[in-house]
Image (cartoon, rainbow, N blue to C red; front, side, top):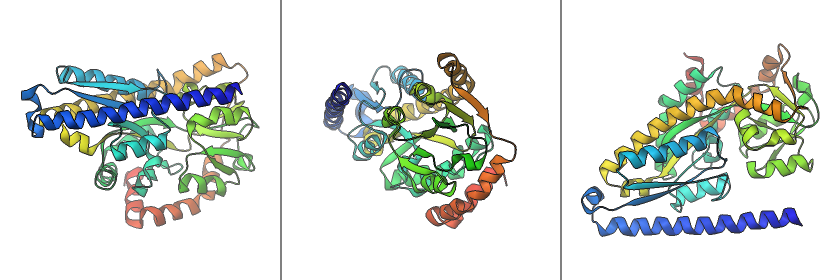
Length: 355
């Protein structure tokens, strides 16, 4: 009963905050209209308020970058824009955040790229297993023509403007059952996944059972053994405290998570042109800060978890396992070509391979 009451209290809080955020969006729209055209805001002293939804708590790279964005924007705008950062899913799950951004109920937020696949299937292409060999490659693709194409499609099809693509880190296999050293070790495990066809197909190809769940449900699901494991970068595992309810962490680095920082396009267009430039400028600075924080968190988070959970067993994949997994995932890449289009998929793979 206490656990149910906690979840009920969280839901009431979320709905209250979301209602307030929606009211704020309406107030902003009306306030901006009083001043006339978008370019007149500077002259009439209109002030703007941005609700920015996050899914993690203090200390997580994306959250710290969101705060930094708000500080930079406030400084650049001379206080004409205030950013309120809402932590740890206060405005809803990741999918609810994406829906609210598209509808304009909230102004800003970030989400794992896979959650944007409903509007733009290619957005989940970054989550192809073993796509990126290192961060430098991932950044080159995210910031290059492939990332720009995804951003353009999101703007035209989902009504959100991409302000930055964040480094959410390389995923590790986490579970309560056994060390993952070879491909067969994944067989039979119930693994929580983001609900997108590529990730689901990948685990099925490896003989595991994919279980789509929101990140906010994972701790309890691991605790109750509803699932056996999940996948996450070290920073995410630390921030969500999953190290408390798992026994094994495998440095598989089998996929790279991309988080997309977005702003509702209609709201962005309602801003005066000078403030639009400040938003873009602050977002660019925040993206660079987030990536630097993410790189540092890769090792720092693991050290903290090993200190906090002395029983946590950490291991690497056995030599040759990554190649064996890649071979098993050949059908997943075929599915990607079907879902994303052969031309986009070929361009993505070429970019990732540096050809």
